[in-house]
Amino acid sequence: MSKHDQLTCHDILGSLGDYLDGNLRADLCEEIENHMRGCENCRVVVDTTSKTIYLYHHTAREVELPNGARERLFSALKLDDFILPKR
Amino acid sequence: MIETNIPEFSIELLQAGDRVEFARMVEAYYGPIYRLALKMLGDSSDAEDVLQNTFLKALQYLPTFEGRSSFSTWLYRIAANEALMLLRKRRPTVPVDENPDDDEDGFMPAQFSDWCCLPEQDFLTAESKRQLDQAIQKLPETLRVVFLLRDIEGLSIRDTSEALGLSETAVKTRLLRARLQLRESLSTYYGERLTYRMNMETQE
Picture 1 (cartoon, helix red, strand yellow):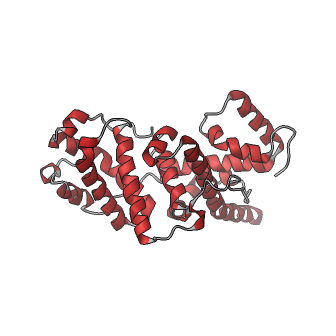
Picture 2 (cartoon, helix red, strand yellow; picture 1 turned 90 degrees about the vertical axis):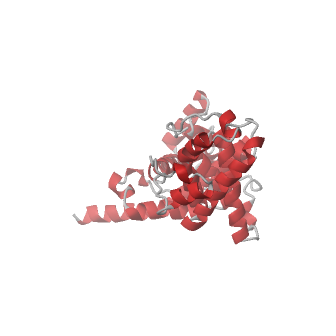
Picture 3 (cartoon, chains in turn red, green; picture 1 turned 90 degrees about the horizontal axis):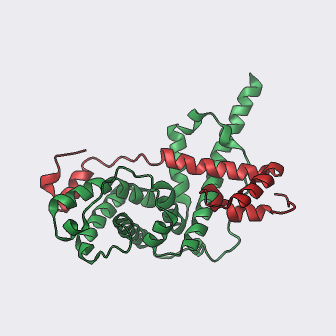
């Protein structure tokens, strides 16, 4: 990673969380975007980190419970009479 | 919040021991709580233990719920503690890298493969999903739990910090570290996919 006039690559990493979550001040976002135009490695890190979050968000959320797990849970909680109305 | 379909619950009814309200609450949360447990532990049987213990503890401690955090944050807090306890029981010694806040420099990216542009189908394969799950399991548990609450369950930074009893700064640090480590793991796999795709193209 290269050194830039204003922001170093290290600075980019420090602000990356706020930048990706949309919590960074507009002028600082602009500085990051300026830096990325001249620093391919930082651009790739920002883009692939963003893609990483997106992928987890959209594909890792689908989880199947083992067979009977819901029923066992309701039984353990003495809620057997509520087992039937499955969503 | 990602979860928009979770209904509101009456804390008064829950605390008064209303079984209908309690069943409604369990129905709404058992999925997300199981998901958190499964991704923390990587084992469905352990995750089911955590699922049951979480709601048993919730039932037990409901009378002491004071509403300082939201109900869902409180429930996630119980679940995260249960999962962390089980992990520590499995492996009683805490490795050195389990104190992620000590090292201020954090984690420097080492892979710069631009795999974002891979075709969408490459991200939807069973193998791709397996890689995502494996990368989570490689994270130190202190980073893993922050990532799961924030980026999978969709808690805010503030709710994550309340659920884990950490400062918001610590949550942000750990979250960034987790995201960068995951990016690094995924770059290995998707970087290979990219090379493969490019080789295919030059052969055509």
